[in-house]
Every structure is written in C-alpha cells, then in structure tokens.
Image (cartoon, rainbow, N blue to C red; front, side, top):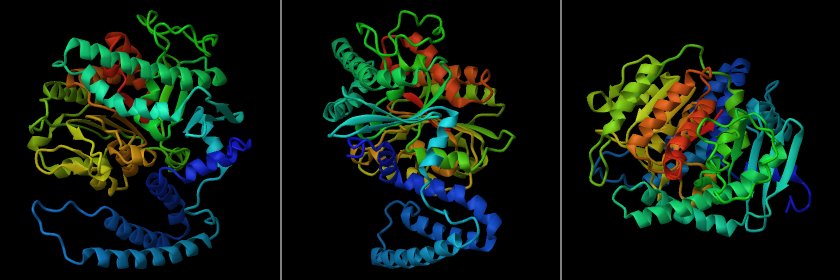
Length: 478
C-alpha cells in the first residue's frame, strides 16, 4: 500500500521491521555495546548477563543421545523468560537515559539506512501478491522501480521445483533426458530473474564498472533463488541494460548470454539494518588468523568427498596454515575458531533441516555442529568464513524472510562476510571454485566479494551450459 501511495520510505521502514528479526536484534546489540561500554561499563555488563541468560533459553545446549526430557522444564522456562525480559526492559530504559544512548536498541533511522549506499547500491526486492517492486538505495537517494513483469505466484512455483532441478542437473546417475530437462528449467528461472528483476534494476542504476558492489535484499520466494546469477536466455533479444557502457567481459565469455555476474559484484544482506550494524561495529583486526578444516563423515546416503582434502590443502597453502582434519582433532577446535579466526575455510558435509532450521548442521565425526550452537557464540571479528558445504543458505519457505540458516549463523558469530551455497554442489566443482577464489583473492586486496565475483565469471566460462554447477556459491555480508 505504501508503494501504491507513493511512499517508498515508509515501505522500506516496514520491510525492515518485519524481516530478519533475530539477525537485526543480535547484530544491533553488538554494535550498540561498543559505545555503551565507554559510557557505563557496569550497566553494559548487566545488560550482557541478561542477554546471555535469554540466549541460553533460546539456544539450549544439544541434549545427550537418548537423554530423557526434563519434566516441568517448559513452565519454568516461561517464568524465567518473563522475569528476565522484565529486568532487561528496566536496564534498557536506564541505558537510554545515559547521555548519547537514547537510541540504544532502536531501529536505525531512514537516513542511516540510506547512508549504506555510500559503499554501493543496496537493492531491496519486495515480492508480494499485490505488486512487486525494487527499492534502490543510492547516493542520490531512494529510487523506486516497479517490477511489473514479476509475479509472486510464478516466483513461488519456480522456487518450489528449482532445488529438485539443480540436484537432477548435477546427478551423474540421472538419465540424460532428465538432466537436459532440468537444465532447461534452471536456465528458464535464471532468465526470469534477469528479465524481471536484474535487467530493470541495472537499467536504472546504469553501472559501468563490473567490480561495482551491489547488495541485494531478497524477500519471500526470492530468498531461495540465485538472484546473483540472473542470466538471460540465449535467445533473448537484448535487455534493458544493453546500452550500458560496460567494460570488456572475461576472456571466453563473449559467446555466453548476458548475466548479472558479468555486470556487478553481487552480495546479499538479509536486511539493510543487518548491513548497517555490521559496518557500525568496526573493522576486523589488522592481523590475519586463519584456519582451514575438513571432514569426510561417512553416513548412509552421503557421497564421499575425495576432493575436500585437496581443496583444504590448497586453501591452507594460500592462507599460510596447515589444514586440520576434524576426524583427528577435538570438536572444540572448530568452535574456538569461530571466535578467534579472521579467515575460516570449512570443507565438509552440511544438512539444511527444512522442518527446524535451528537444527541445520555441519556433520562432524562426533557430535554435529548446529545453527543454534553456532548462533549462541559471540565475540568474533572474522573477515571471511568460506563454507564449502551443501546448501548452507537454504531455508524453509515459511521462514525465508528470517534468514535462519548456517550462512547467517556465521554473521551472528561476528564474521563480516560469508561465502555459502544455495544447494548441493559436487565436491569436484567445490574444489574448482575454491581454488579459483583464492587465486582471485590474492589480486583484490582481501576483498572476498570481488574475488568471488571474478571466480564466478571464470567458473561460468568453464561450465558454460551447466548453471547448477557455477551459480550455487554466493557472498553474504560486507
């Protein structure tokens, strides 16, 4: 309604308030605490104790196998939560009474959100059954681009079958006619994303430099699709952005269809508020503390990962460390690395739980590491977490706007940037992508998003007509 009435600022504010509640709350706490500690360290500690107690209720430790449930725990937890929230409310009011703390734990202003465009445009794509629109935060202000060709129901249908199609397209056991049909449907979805979203947005932004950063904020079904890989069909007769004066594409890509990967450096952010808080907390330490870990857990239905060890060795060599096999070290080594590392590379199996995304997990030799356990950690200042694992950014349809998945868990820990995957990728493809990424990272002054964009351009040329292979990896965060 706000967009129909010509009020895009109000529309943006409502979208920010209604999405990514957990991420916005946790990232906002981290950013606000830095200033609060200087103003009143004791009150900051009191706030943190209450917050930690509430987080323990939200993310209890995983139960031991076959442990009996604790009788009456639910009623006690409700009473405990009510008492903690009441005490926290009093503490927050005391904090806001301090000089310079009136906005503690309040949503950022529209002006603060618009300021995020200083680093590159931020594009919020609102998908609704009533209408679909793009809100473009730029240095010139907020622009509104109606996406008249985009239909919410069509997008939902596309998302429902997309993940099954990419699995079929990458399955070496599938019949060739099934693979061809799946690839055709995947290509059609990428064309839809180009034609109805990326094309109109690029036409408005008129980006000339392919290394220009653009942050995408997808909503609803779009959260489950690779908008960063939007690509025109081969028979597309041009697009709204064809007359933009762009630099030369990578060698070998001239015969490929128009694609967003050749036009921009795309990153995702769950909300503009999350991006604002990530930047407000400051930069990572100057020194690099890296770790590379891999595991090839054998369980029924899981393929072996013969390339994961080679990938880990190559990543470790680039980062100047020795790779760690999680089968040969304690689980706590990985948990500690979440906080201590500026650069962390993981090559292992992961499972996205579509019924309870809080139990989405990395598969470890002993006890798996879940979203809830990762998200309960805090205090990290990481620059990059590279998650070379299956479908780390996949989330169930009814929780898509909350961004509860393994990729976002690393944002909650404190990593400013995360590379994840939207679907299962063969480990040989993962190895190729990782090697190309670290080659590119050496040339772009530790800018992971730029390195991944350049990697995508090269890998796309390598796999050409197999978008399921090159389009899964993406960058989230700063």
